[in-house]
Length: 97
Image 1 (cartoon, helix red, strand yellow):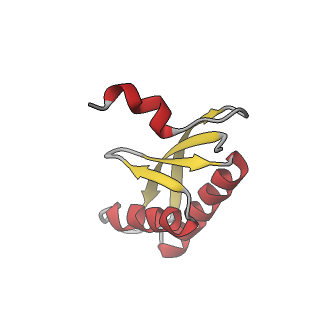
Image 2 (tube, rainbow, N blue to C red):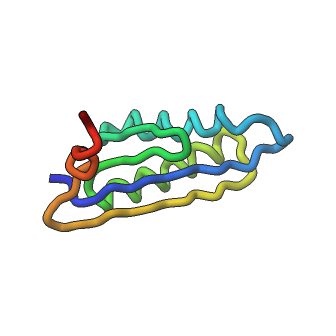
């Protein structure tokens, strides 16, 4: 069972002040390629898995956005950690019809 949820908002600095969406898309591609369960939301993306694996994905996301051409990045992260297990579905089930 996954032991962590990690929500991340990537805020890239672009070289010429252009739209950040292609940079954010690149970060999300890293998550998609990782194979972890995730959910894209309007202001952040939440991943579910092993804490060490999720933190490694964050590192890879930042590296990918820099390679894409960003001149700097702010990554805002929230983590819910429980060695006994935690899941997006369990935390949100009462809000679903």
